[in-house]
Image (tube, rainbow, N blue to C red; front, side, top):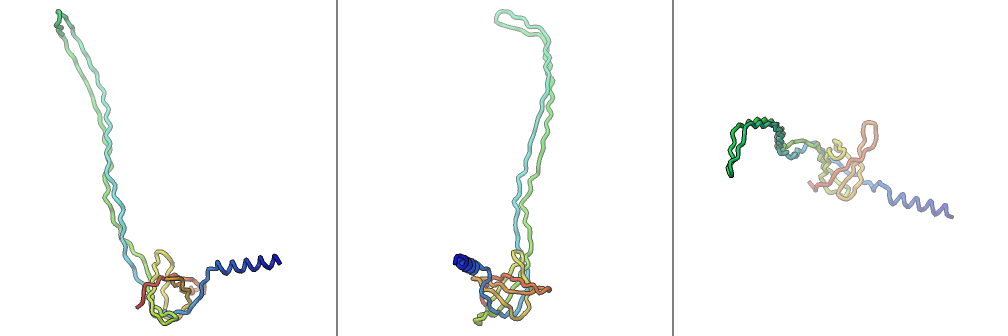
Amino acid sequence: MKKLILIMFISLAALAFGKDKPTVTIQIVDSQASTREFTYTTPGKAGTSNTTCNTNGTADTSGNATSYGDNTSYNGSTNLNANTNCTTTSTPATPPQTYASYIAQENVRAIMPDGSHVALWCQAGFRRCANLRPGKYTAEIDGSSVRICAFDLSQKVHKIKYKDVGGW
């Protein structure tokens, strides 16, 4: 009895969490490949500058000092020699840069089983797309998405996700 309950539980769990959706047959009327241009910008960087200085010097004093009451007189000479070396390191600023790129996309016009005409769109940069020829295809409908089953040359089935973008 426990084995039977366990088998029933596993079977129900497999049905509840299965990935396959109910399938329908749709008719592809035409398919067009196109590209969409997009741009993106990278920010620039401010320039930097750093200065480092090193000073070396000597002082040489020679002579006599004489004091007369409140006044002091000094007879002599003072020689001062100093040397300063500075080094500046700079990194130039870089301006923001804008880049342009292209994404391949596929646009499909299809007739659904209820007779409604829909336009479907697939963008290759985010998923696998295919150039579908006119004809009938098996598909899974999942909200506003349609997964069309297409065969490759080795007859392997690929489910290609298309988004519904409205009627035509």
